[in-house]
Length: 363
Image 1 (cartoon, helix red, strand yellow):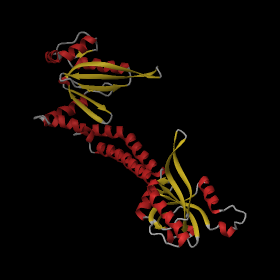
Image 2 (cartoon, rainbow, N blue to C red):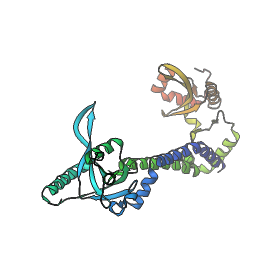
Image 3 (cartoon, rainbow, N blue to C red):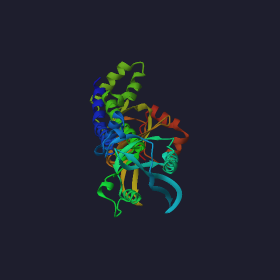
C-alpha cells in the first residue's frame, strides 16, 4: 500500500538522526571507558602473574594466587565530613613476584579479612618458621603506583635509605596489582559501562529496525484492519492521503485526521473528535520567560485527548480553522464554561457532532 510506504519513509527520516545518535553514544561510551579492553580481557582471561617476566608485568591483566604477604604499607579509610570513620576501604601489601622481586597488591575491603589473616601467618613464619596455611586468588591489572602509594611503599622498604644500593632498589618494582580492575577501571564500573552501551546501541537499532519494517504505522494498521470493510477503507485512505493537502503536516477530512507524532503515524476517526483548541505553554528559567510552545488539542466523546505539536501560534490557528471547516459541529476554543461542560456532559458534544451543527462561535 502506497500510503504505508510513504509514511514508513517519513518515519525512517524522523528516527534516523536520533537512532544514530543513540548508537554513536553507545559506541563512544564503550570505547572511551574501556569497554574494548574489558571485552578483550574477559574473552582472553587473565594471565597467571607467575608466568610473566618482570618486563611483562606493567599493564597486564593477571590472576595471582597470593600465598605470602611481607607487610602492609598503606591503607585508605572512609571519611565523612572530613572525619575518619574507622572503616577501612582498602589496604596495600607487599607480595613477591618474578624471580626475586617485589611489588604491591591493592585490595578492597572484600579481601581484607583473608589478607590480614595471611599477613599474621606470614609474620609467624618469620618468628618460628611455621608456613602459612591459607592463600587467596586475586584478578586485576598491574598498574604503576600512584604517588602516595609509591612514597609509603618506598618508606616501608627503605628504598631511599643511604645504604640502599641500586641493586637493592631494583628489587622493588613500582607497580601494584589492583584487584578487580581491567585497565584503570573497576570491573563493576565496566559492567555498568558495557550494559549502558548495549542499551544505547540496542535502543538505536530498535528504533531504526522498527522504522524499516513499518512498526511506527502498526496502530494505524490495527485501526483500519479491525473494520469489516478494511480493504475498501484502505482504498479510501489511499485517496485521502493523495488528495488531501496537509495543513502544517496534518491531513484533515470529514472522515480522517492523519499526522506524525515523531516517528509514529497517528490516524484518527474524524467522527470521534468533538472539541478542538489551541494550547500554549510558556517556558521559564529562573522566572524569566524563555519561549513558548504550541499544540492543537483534540478531545473525543470518550474523554481521550490527542496533542499535535506545531511550531507557531499561526500554524495552530490554521489547523483549528481547517478542523472547524471539515468537522461540522466540532466545538472550537477553550473557556472555563466549555471545560466544565465537557467534564460533566460530554454527550452534548457528541450530539452536536452527530447533528453536524455549524459552530458559529469561536471561543
